[in-house]
Each structure stands twice: as structure tokens, then as C-alpha cells.
Amino acid sequence: MAVTAADVKKLRGATDAPMMDCKKALVENDGDFDKSVAWLRDRGIAKSAKKADRVAAEGSVGLKIADDFSKASIVEINSETDFVAKNDAFKSLVSTTAAQVFATEAADTAALRSTQMDGKDFTDYFDESVAKIGEKIEARRMATLVGNETTVVNGYVHSNTRIGVVVAITCDSAKTASTMKDMAKNVAMHASAMKPTTLSYADFDAAYVADETAGRIEAIKKENEERVRLKKPLINVPEYVSMCQLTADVLAKAEENIKAELKAQNKPEKIWDKIVPGQVARYIADNTTLDKEQALVDQNYVLDEKLSVAQAVEAAGKAAGGTASISAFVRLEVGEGIEKKEDDFAAEVAAQMG
Image (cartoon, rainbow, N blue to C red; front, side, top):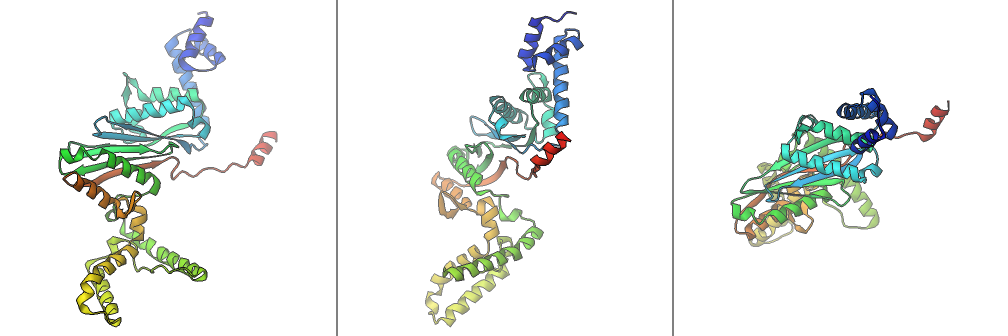
């Protein structure tokens, strides 16, 4: 079958593939348009496979939120270069993929690729888009939070599109929940900046806390050495780093020590009840540095550092006439945990010239 210029133009328009590749696809497939599209798609996949050793650690986070804040989905799409991540075609791929995750609630890449979109395999759409863009692109991570009449879900993507967070706040009633969408977004913005790794200190693995304890205490001791040199106030050296270590016995012992110190200072016992609660609170603050760094609800809230995030949400719920607490969150940062390959440019050029 003769291949016309019009045929080539039509195939190029549908696939954005180079003109000569379009012509070859039509010749190879006897002018069959659909087979030619598939041929080009397969060729694009083959090119992508040759790039498998390259690291896709750039990219963007996509977000889709229900109009009634009952559900939100987040997805990380990786590319090889930051330049491609700013491309309109890539942005469209991110947006469409986020919408597909939202529609299907796919929890991982394999599940996403098995979904259907407009009666076709989503994997076909994704791979065709990748072939057009022309570099290695991966849908790496994704998640969906689903609410109900008493749980509101909202999210935030930072202006650089590299960090995104979705947050669910559960309330005592639909009335309270209806007032929490802005608070949920504020918490998401907080999490984007403060990098929590878990919801609460209660989620920490005991072995992890034990491993962190000695190192964190030693770091504070070293900081105090520098503070001595600079003649700055010293930081209290803790015994622990997380609330999960502060058992009832530990706190009781701390209170005993505080009272013993007050007695040694000849403070009248009748005023101890005014001093001890504050001292215990200070002891807890000094001995929960891991929680304040990594557990979302235990962090100091960026919009009011006098409150923890949990306390800020609780206060917002109380102001609305009910109760509110964070029930879940997901934070994705582009390239997080990916080890980037450092290319030796000189060695690469030498290899090509050899």
C-alpha cells in the first residue's frame, strides 16, 4: 500500500513522533493507522528501556482534591531532568495521572497501570506520553485519602511542585468538619515545610527510638561545648528523646527530682504546686526532641509555635463548637530516597572517543 504525505502528517499529529519514523511505521504496517501508532509506541518503550540505567530523580507532585473535600489523591511523577519537569506535556501527564489515581484509588504503579481510562488501558496513555516527551519518566508513588461526613480531606503542593501533602482531619460531627478544610490545608502546608515522617510518636518503632537516643543526646552535648565557647546559655541535656520512653515511672521520678531540687533551694512547699507542673512540662519538652522533629502532631505548629500541631487542630475544632484531630497524612517529596548517579563527564567523553 502506498503511503501518502497526508497519512504521515496524520500519524505525526497523533503521536508527535518524528516524520521519518511515522513514514517507516506506516510502511511496516501496510498503512494501518492503529497498528502504526502501536508500532511507534513500542518503539518509544524500547527507547525508554535503553535508558533504564538512568536515574529519574527530578519531576513533580500532582494533586487532585474533591470539590467537597471528601477525598484527595497525590502522585509523584519522576523525570530525568528538571527541564522536562517544566514542560507542558509533562505537566499534563502529571495532572492526568493524579486524576486517574483519584478516580481509581490505585495505591501503586502496578495497580495504576492496570486501570482503564476512557475505555483504554491507562498504561497505553502513559507510555505514549512518555514516548512523546522523550526521556525516562516513572509514576513512582501515589496515595489517596478518603473522608466521610465527619472527616475532611485537603492538600497542598508547594510552588516548586516538588513537595505535596494531603491531610485528613476527623471531627465529632459534619458541622465541625465543614469548618476544617482550611485548617487541613494549613496543616498540609506546615508538613511540606517541616518534613514529618510519621503522624505521632506512638508510630515509632522501639528499636528506632533506641538507636536515635544516644546519638541525639551526644549531639546536644557537642552543641553545649560550642555554646560554652560562645558564652551562650546551655541546652538541658535530656535522658530520652521521645514521649514513648516517658513511662509513668519515668515521669514520677522526674517529679520527685524536681521536688528535691526545690527543697534544696529552700522553696516553700506551699508554692510547689505552682512550680512543679511547669517544670514537668519543661522536662517533657527537653526529652521529646525526636517527636518534635519527625512526628506531625507533636511538632510545634509553624503558624503558632506556642502550640503543637495537634493542639492547633484541637483548638480549631473547639472554636467550631466540636472536636477535631488529624487522622492521616501523606507527604511526598520528589526524588526522596533515590540515590542519584554522579556522572563523570570527562570519563564519558573519553569512552566515546576511545
